[in-house]
Image (cartoon, rainbow, N blue to C red; front, side):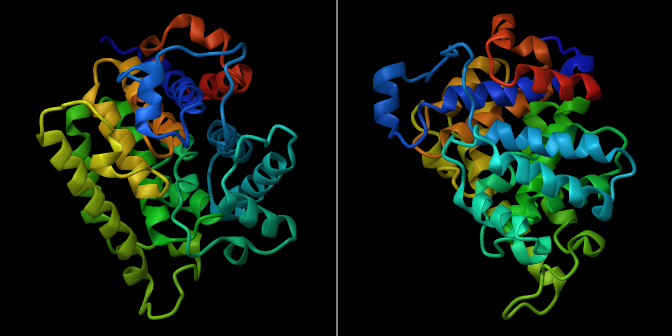
Length: 335
């Protein structure tokens, strides 16, 4: 499939929304229930006009909006008030009725009370709400790798303060960034593993401050290493699944149900890589999962769209997806 690199941001933003919409009706359902309705390939057609998305796309647009509001250079002091306001706007919106994650709601509730973000966050949560919204960080131009990594972790840290949430968010953002730049899908697992090794002791103190402090943690390097080690462990499961012939079935059995950040990354990557040349099939496979189907399909769509560009998706879908004007605004800014 030829790739129009100029439209890879569009492919990513619309792809994540398409995956979200396809996974919305299958979330919370068992695999057997899903395939009884859609077949083993999962849903392949958007339903409704507009085709509704979930909080995954809504919060992704919040992160994208905060980045656009901030502009360059991106620093913690400049980005934080925009992220805070965008998250508060989302939390108070009447459209925030799509089974939003409780960690996000509780943390944003504390932000609404005026607490500093480091006190508002849930220090023990590594839920996938940390990285299902991070794709815009991978698309934002003008960042070096250090700043991109820090921004990815920081947007997680406002709600999900667990080191694995931080590390998985960084890996997700870099997967989008690398695929958009032309990384071959087959090379993605090795690139993710290498990132786990090189970043294992890197703590972005200028951004994260004293987030690392907690019982029985000797220092910031030990704190962040726990997150990278958990991500590496799930990447072992991803590699094992990719070495086996694909016999169909529920991808969650190989890499987890996606309710937690590292499993959302790995299972989305698995669905994408099993169907690297057929993005719509990757979304259907991701939506036909027994776990957090909308988040898994959302991330699979971000990866496929970043790799293949806007041409990856049926043209008619763009007119039917909810928030199409917001998605187009972000995409046009970065394409």
